[in-house]
Image (cartoon, rainbow, N blue to C red; front, side, top):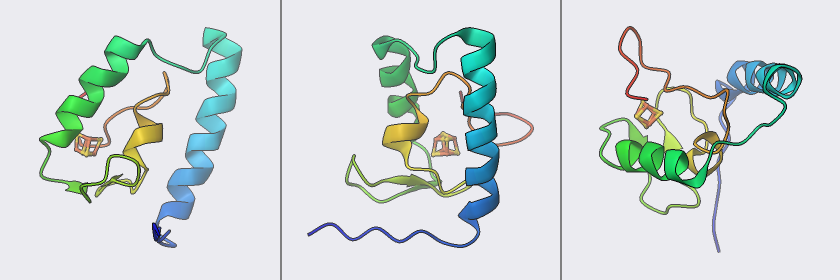
Length: 87
Ligand code: SF4
């Protein structure tokens, strides 16, 4: 059985993400990136020192705590590292 913990620190990021999704629908007309772009993002995250977990379906970004399998799909999402995001 897969156990997923959602930390309270993730709530502000979740609220911002929902707002960005709504904005993306309005501005881009679509939410999702092409498969090649998603695969590229996942490959970068797989090598990142901030990645939490090894299961592809439940691994998270250690900075924003987003689930990478979802985060990498959306057009409006960005790597949260500043000043140099990895994607
Ligand atoms: S989103 Fe950025 S910081 Fe987070 S795991 Fe991926 S590459 Fe690392």
